Image (cartoon, rainbow, N blue to C red; front, top):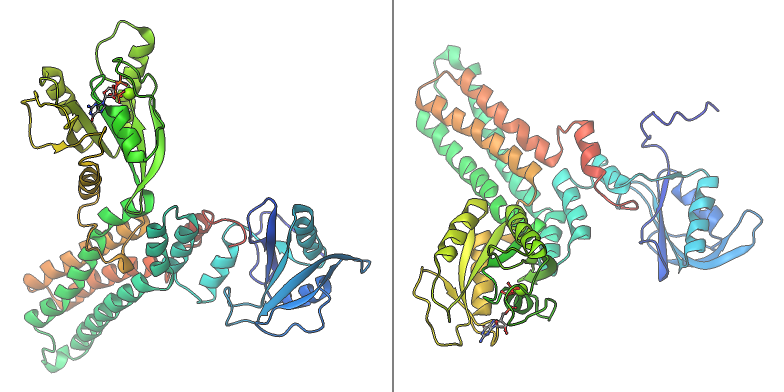
Length: 456
Ligand SMILES: Nc1nc2c(ncn2[C@@H]2O[C@H](COP(=O)(O)OP(=O)(O)OP(=O)(O)O)[C@@H](O)[C@H]2O)c(=O)[nH]1
Ligand SMILES: [Mg+2]
């Protein structure tokens, strides 16, 4: 047998193996095999009486000498109706790291190859079990940190977004066919599609693509969450508000101005949207080197935030520095003005509008959460989560498609010959195919699937 060249691409005809559960000790650990020899290897690894499709079979997992290593459950999913579209066997062992290592190593001895990250799903994609959008949904589902994120990703996995894209594609293909037919009949002087008809057919396609692309402003927040910096002068109650939004006493709160020195960050979730909260040092001119460094870090936190809360103390008079800070913050990111200490007598006669809260009593805090989401992801409420575009790859391609559709519409308007309009329409079709993976280059696929975990 010739030596295996590591630079050669891994072949799809290999049988691959990988642990499907995370490393560490657990009650159960699953090892998955996929490929033409999956069943054969599983039968040598596990001595069960029968290995019938989709039925868990109990049996001993044995080494090369036939000695028992563990009692396991093996389930055979014959292709093409399996996750990858190939023969798949899942072996559920006890979740002991040496046992799982044995299961993998023994499978390798028996002729399997270790799967690369995302290779199971990549095979599912290649075998037409799912399109690229669904595959990306699988990855996002596994990476989800909130139930809401998981739900959006699950909808994508079962094909909700793909279905919409398919509908758009068939409308576009129909229009292309209509124009192509018109060209064929042109010599007979029959004008099959008039200007209004073409524009009428283009309009719903443009509307749908534009709505999907616009949904990304919400989708990116759903998938990636947001970073929220809390800034303000010393002692206005930033740390108190941070603790309130977080739901626990994480940051030190003290009447001494200049309590928080270092920016601290913690993860929270607002209505299922992951929010990284950053408490910062109160901003003021200070001769103390440590405090000055803290203030510098407050500015850095602002620079990297998606959104900020500028907190003022309602029980104190408004200061010029509040306005200055507000303006400087707006240069960095969108912000909300928050008046804190609403429970005290009000002396602040400054800017409005602002959201009034009391970090001490909790009053106004849930309204503040809602305002933050409204600002960061306008339209989140009432959003159709089933077809939310959540990744930038999809959004870029949709925008590209929209550009071509607009060019086509302009061409129709100016009575351009159908041959030319068709060029724009084909140009609109290409990105659509790339989104679902119909015409995606291998190196782009490599990049996408490398972001998956091994065993998926
Ligand atoms: N009455 C009242 N007091 C508050 C409220 N929020 C904070 N405080 C008090 O204000 C003081 C300062 O609160 P902190 O949360 O430490 O303020 P900070 O903005 O983080 O201050 P530095 O870290 O020093 O910049 C503490 O004594 C808090 O108990 C509020 O809503 N109402
Ligand atoms: Mg503080």
